[in-house]
Amino acid sequence: MSGANIAVVGATGAVGQVVLSILEQRNFPVGELRLLASKRSAGTRISVMGEELVVDEAMPDSFDGMDIVFFAAGGSTSQALAPEAAKRGAVVVDKSSAWRMDPTVPLVIPEINPDDIREHKGIISSPNCSTIVMLMALAPLHRANPIQRVIVDTYQSASGAGAQAVVELMQQTRDVLDHKVPSHSTFPATLAFNALPHVEDFGEDDYTTEEIKMENETRKIMHLPDLPVSATCVRVPVPISHSEAVHIEFANYMSPDEARDVLSEFPGVRVIDDIASKSYPLADYATGKDEIFVGRIRPDKAFHNGLSIWTVGDNLRKGAALNSVQIAEALLEQGLVSSNGNGR
Ligand SMILES: NC(=O)c1ccc[n+]([C@@H]2O[C@H](COP(=O)([O-])OP(=O)(O)OC[C@H]3O[C@@H](n4cnc5c(N)ncnc54)[C@H](OP(=O)(O)O)[C@@H]3O)[C@@H](O)[C@H]2O)c1
Image (cartoon, rainbow, N blue to C red):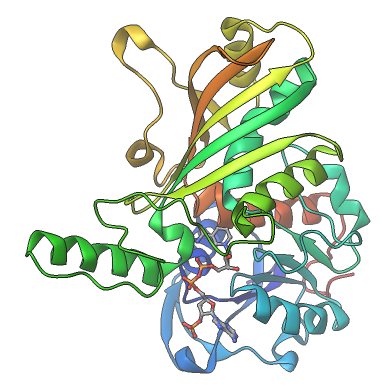
């Protein structure tokens, strides 16, 4: 094989598995491919790109000779190992929250702020999945009509909490149907047949860390440090794909038709919005697809110059793995990584 030498940390996880399939689907030019995870999964065999590869435990010297390293293994692993990969000359594309708000680390959605990639010093962060699903709709609208204020309520899928979370949801569902008492370990309470207004941990101001991420990451990616953003993040018993109700105040009046036109022209966004035929985006339809879907576009009744929209996207694809692979593609396109010759 010829191409960039790639390592995937977290190759056995929900996001890592999708990174591998997207690299293959998009014919990403891969030279050597290293699959890495924790000690628990060392020795596991995974079929990828027509080969069976063995997973190794991620160690600092795992990154020797790598050009691009995808991290999808949680914040503490990224905190510990991403600098080791960068030190060895690789460019890190990190899916965790570990580096996102570091002022020296670009936080990138390639359709929105591709130029920020050039500022990287070895680590590039990919945003939170809920932030990506919202901003793919907000960014084109903002270019047409400056956004003044945003309120968002999310309906987030179980897979946003990792592969084990989906197993837990399925088991809880079976238990409830069998009249057994369900147990929970990944979620803070039973998710089956429920809605949990509690994604990640509560912070000092009674917002959760997921809600704070949506606020801070939106400001950083959009280059709008003072934009008021208020989020309520809710976990719902859906396996894959996040849905979000977003209320937006603009500087000037914008009609729903104008918003539909703007959104339809933005790469990676598809409008499904025909009330007459009861067409609107749904999580089961979005699952497995690359686009972010937007519908229910209508005037907001509480905001002056406001619109309310409904946006849905696959949290494992555009919300995570696809966005990371697109960052890697941009690195190659912008000549910021040399294939088969070690990173920077
Ligand atoms: N799921 C989503 O929708 C989503 C979206 C955006 C961002 N993210 C972020 O992406 C990251 C991965 O999430 P996920 O949903 O894929 O989680 P997951 O399904 O739980 O997978 C975690 C992966 O990390 C590996 N890992 C755990 N500890 C490790 C260590 N000490 N060293 C090396 N590898 C280690 C695991 O390997 P083992 O098999 O050895 O345990 C597994 O491959 C997280 O930071 C998450 O916040 C997830």
